[in-house]
Image (cartoon, rainbow, N blue to C red; front, side, top):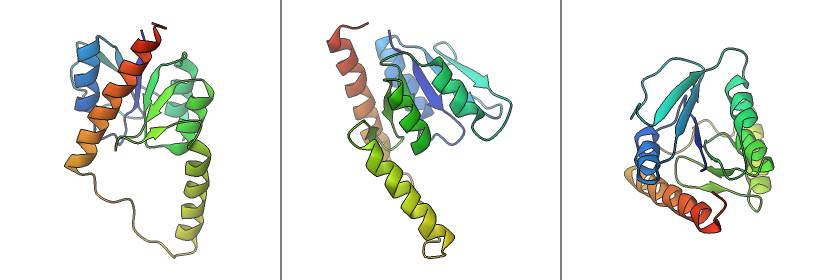
Length: 152
């Protein structure tokens, strides 16, 4: 059975992750740099990591097995997880795959350069109800695809 790991510090879809996980009987691990409340403690746990900037990312990558699922908006973490054959989805429902992660990394670098130059001062658009709905649908699709493969 795949496990779901959530880069939890700024994740807006924690309850939705648990909803899908409960439907399929999957375990969820929320990973954070700080203590926080987690939804559905019957199927989820919180791991609080100590350490530097990438400590949570390093912990998640160190736990992964093929076809585990990672929920993150962190593109470098998504890239590392794809390298471990995990499935990765962003909180807005955007899947990160081998086919699109290179472009996502390049866009991240470009946006960082533009921000440093002062050309962009805002952040991403506000999280919306349609993002939550798309996330639920896509996470469900990912779990179903893994189950259809018969690997678990």
